[in-house]
Length: 207
Image 1 (tube, rainbow, N blue to C red):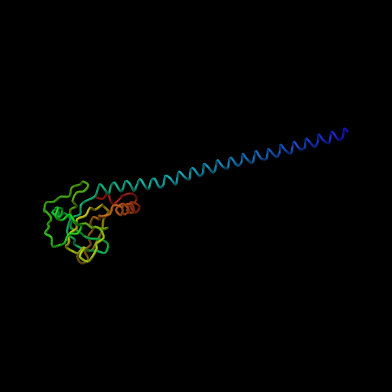
Image 2: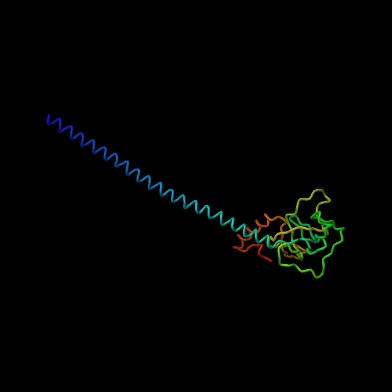
């Protein structure tokens, strides 16, 4: 009888030890899992912060350049000197092209009588008339042969600063002029590319 009682007590003690070890193992496993979860949460939060900050920085830069393009916008109104595959070389400053009778289209036939005042000066303000030879891109799409720009036709468009452009004037003579885009989004894109190339300076800042 005493031996049975002792055997039963030993069995109970062993069972209790097994149960305690089992729960201890579960506790440490849960503690380790909790630590891993916290580390993963911290890592993901840090990664999310980096990923969030990067696009935000790019968006802020694009908005800044957009504001510079709007600030530097000019009315390009003048005679087409050259028609190039990627744009038009325009002698801008023909202010009489802004008269109401001619404001129905951005492209005005060369048969229209227009001239540039000798004393016209370009103001340094948004929407001022651009004066001098410029390169213009991203014009509206033309429909029909008669609507395609030709040398000595006139254009009247709002242009946004997009850097500079070098073209061949006469013979082998190279000329560098201001580049304007008639599309704001394209102007922002060109300025972003220029900023990446030059290390921060944008084409819109070139006046």
